[in-house]
Length: 410
Ligand SMILES: *Cc1c(COP(=O)(O)O)cnc(C)c1O
Image (cartoon, rainbow, N blue to C red; front, side, top):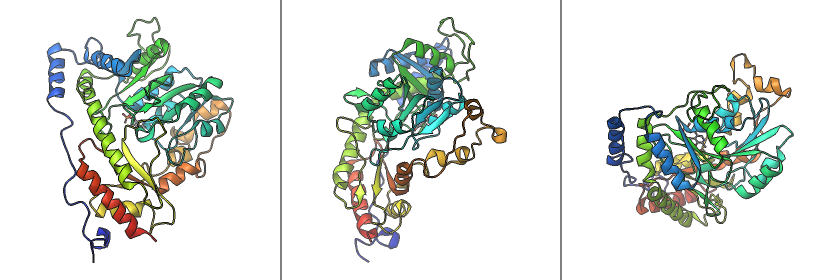
């Protein structure tokens, strides 16, 4: 046994010190919470923290409007609903994403259509979207996976040509930049998540940003039973869920927002160290960020050339785990459309799918729909990124990946 013997084979592990950690929540969050209780109302209506949060967000993104809700999924649902698309029409979205991107599409009785991804950004592209457009397409929900911006200009150009709404799922992409401008401000609506796993958390929450007053008004209504809280003269004319946010959530979210820029700087520094240290390992393809784009690095995912190493991504991740690195194979286990919900179209009891009935068409979700996305998830290994990780953590991680790549190479 030598230094280079993999820990999984009984060798010494690469990471012997704990990863950097820290407090995500502290006195700033407590102070905002105390302010809520002093104010005396816990509902956003008549309260004021959700409002303050939205002012903060608008100033940060230089955007006209912001509406807060109960989750990222809620924000995305309100966004798609606000586009006023007739049931049975199609919405193009990404196969590698959280279920939250799909929930609103399905509840609005729309048909999700999946565009394939670029093999190295893992994002959908104008080219892949164009291939799946039909006369029934009405909107595109782009997902900036892991905070890596999609190539938005060609997508927006395509959308303009076909009169499609564009919603940006920015749940993982706080502060990510495309051509010097924040993602979430390019499309018609940007939607963000404040769940515990995201860059900023208030336990659960999610909000939309837009420059369109009409879309904002409808999003606001859709987040709150379609009551007319803004006095727009449009009350209970549509069916809407109750996705209200509480003052406590947004008090925490407001304090969290103040941490964003520093947190992003730390994550970017860490990811840049990884990219520099992992560059050049044969048969290991690093994630590609478009020229001029800046990722917010929710995670760091690279790919292995199939057959180059003993085992697949799972084996590689397991070997890294033994080295003391909390790596995982892929992101989601399989493209979202390969979940039973889609393959059996069991969205509703009785497997009756009203969207399909209304459209008069039959849709099939099965293996082979987005071959690149399927291949990406089979060959990908995901490394964690955290604002609390140190330079030493990055170097340990790099060393471990080099060691595992050498040890598992065929
Ligand atoms: C987290 C996430 C969502 C959903 O956000 P929730 O707050 O969990 O509802 C949607 N899309 C993507 C890409 C996400 O990562």
